[in-house]
Every structure is written in structure tokens, then in C-alpha cells.
Length: 333
Image (cartoon, rainbow, N blue to C red; front, side, top):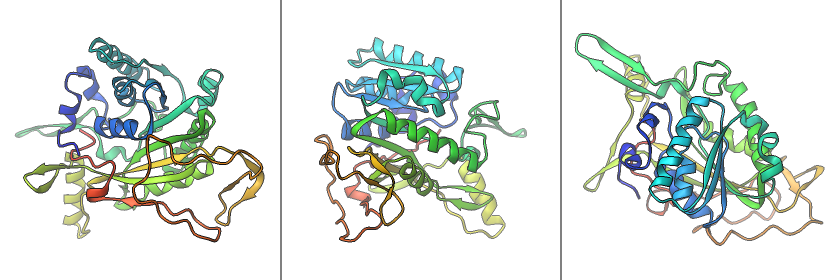
């Protein structure tokens, strides 16, 4: 558990310019995932690295890290964060490069193919709930730092269908760079579009499987505070505003106070072309090397039983006291 708010988690390790990014990954989530799913000396990748939270936390933990980011502004901040952390004595190395993550293999493949132990990333989504506000009596509320980019081609501003198509390409690139048995961690929450709930974590699970990855775990990070023995919500202004307005219109919406932390694995074997399981997902080539057991850095506490017949893989959903990644804070400032 981690009771510090997001700003406190970054204090001393991130430059002041980091606050301008509208949807920063929570350091505690990145840190917990890196500890759980990798070992010191491993290579960690974030294909949508933003201000470099994954990279900073990886280098603090003795891992090497590389990130890709489309916006030069955020690459500069990520590099500044890495330099700042390095000055405080990190034992790993890290770098961020400017590029389109849909071309991940072209950008990094010759150097990193089959070498990445862990991917940790938070895809852009639900821009309406991100950013910061300045409320002044008599002047209303002014939003600022609430956009990923001014470029309408940025994935934080495109249509949902375009976003999912792009993320499918990005995850396929991650699969190509992961070593056999390597893991990919995505953190995301459901969000609302025109008051309708969008199951973004479910969408990510489907496209990850389309990209050739296999579901490994699904965990929950609570985005709340702790006051004594009570959990206290810490929603953003944008979340509160949308829920209040919806309730005024008679829609009984509630604040979303968690993120899904989904873990996928690259199989050790490649699928035969056209071969699928009963659920339509790619089937491993049984003539290849058997898949490894769970990596020594991470063994699920309550693995779900595998069905005898072919069908959807059952993945444990761990919550509350048994949650491997339970963060008592808010993810987006």
C-alpha cells in the first residue's frame, strides 16, 4: 500500500515541469509493477513514456530503461527527470527518444528485439477527466494543462476507434521486442464518453491478445486516500464536475476510484499461421519450446484453475487485501 498523494511520490525525484503533463502515471504503480515483474539489471520499456515515470522508477530500482514519446516537449521533460534522478544516485540507466510508438520495431528493433524483460505503460484515454484548474471567485474556473498535445493526430486526441487501432500496432511492436516469457503491464481505468461507460481495460485486453500476448494477471489499484481506517475518495475536479452535472440530469453516476493493472505475457513459442484456440485467440506452436513457468520475480498468489476444455483463459482478479498493486492515492492530478 502507498498512502502518499501523487505529488508527494514525485517530490525530490522529478523536475517541476512534470506537473504540466495532464495524465501522469502514478509512480507507486510503476514502481510496484517493476519490483513485482522484473529483476535488477533487466531492461524495461515504456512505448508511451510521457514525462518518463516508468523510466525514472526503473532506474531507481537498478533496471535499465528506454522510452518512446511522440511529443518533443515531454521527451525533454523525461530526459530532465532522468538526469535529475541520476544526480540523486540511481543505479540503472535510462533514455527517452522522440518517435511514433506505432513504429516501435523500426525505432528500437535492431537494438532491442528479444531483450526487453518488462513493458510498463499507461495508454492515453478519457482526456476530459485530465488536467488542472484555477478557480477564482467571480471569474469561474479556468482549465490548464488539460491536453496531451495541440496536434490532433496525437493519440490523446483521436477517436476511440483510431486509438484502439494504433494501440494494437504498439502492442504488437512490444511483443516483438519482449524476450520469450517477458511481461507487459498496462494501467488504465474505465471512463465515460457522452455519459456512457467505456470498458477501456476490456478493450486493451482484447487488442493485447490480438497482438499475440497472453493474459497473465489482472489487478486493481485503488485511487483513494486513507484516513484512519477509512478509504477517502480523491477525484479530480473534472471527475466531480461530470458526475455532479450528470446527477443533476437524473443520471446516477459514481466516481471511478480505481485503475485496472493488467499483465500480459509473450509466449515462448510462436503460433502456427491460422491456428487458434477455441476462443479465437492464437494457439501456441506445440512443436516449439514449452512456455516457462511464472518468472521468479512474480508468482500469482491465487492462480485461477485452467479449464479442461479450450476456451477463454481465466485470469484472477485480485482486490482489497490480496491486491498485489493497491495504491492509496490518486493517479492523475
